[in-house]
Length: 324
Ligand code: ASP
Image 1 (cartoon, helix red, strand yellow):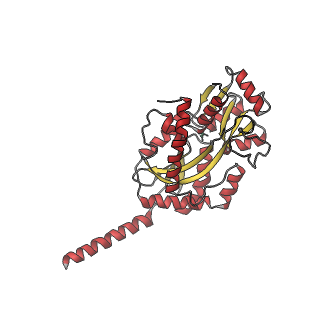
Image 2: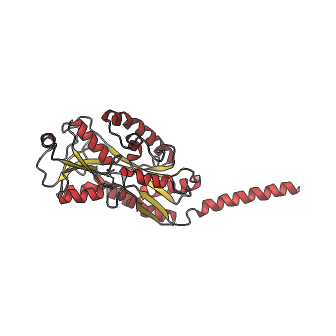
């Protein structure tokens, strides 16, 4: 009898505790690590959703920029953070490409995190400083081939989307260029605007305003079809590089071992943010759209990461580019 009572009391305690944990998370600020500099495209995506996620969670989601080494420093910071739901990572396609680009990583991209959900998929654009000579994409290719020793191409380090896109561009035109790495394409854009670097391939979340304002030149988009925001701009495929396609998908991760209730709560807040019409409208202006509710889930992000590691591995191996 006494034993039954004790067991009943214990299980009631467990239920209350589980209920309390669910009801209480989050009790304080959640840090969203962006593995690139402030002011760049990944940062833009994070800041777009952070406010709405904060409102839904009832706690601030603050963005912390941990740039360097193509996004791997920020990813490592989150891989090693306490798995308590208060530190998350918003990363992009680099989570998949760095798995092959780096000979060894200090974390396991596939098994070292909990998955929260997909956020958005962003097209890229091939852009140049505004006074760069070539007028069209075809001119750009001939000019770059003829001036390979002079042309410089910015990127956000090995493993970054701009690095992957640049590498695909150089390999498609069979012309290696001098690359200039930054901690993110936010600062790279500053140098492109200032004319210190010639070329870059970057997300529309960083290039749209400048292309429209005429402060940089846009040559091509990297999607299979033209974009509504740039109806005049050709796709790289139609402009002479068939099959040249890259889209930068973004996901949110938490350190391995983060309690399921925290992960589920974050995923629910992500869905709320992505369903917000204001966010969808802002994303549309930048050439993208929010992920669907089905994609803003742990299972969808895991499946995407697995598929993208498998997709890019042979491409990267064929290009033979590695980092230590
Ligand atoms: N666009 C960058 C990249 O090349 C990252 C960034 O600064 O957001 O991956």
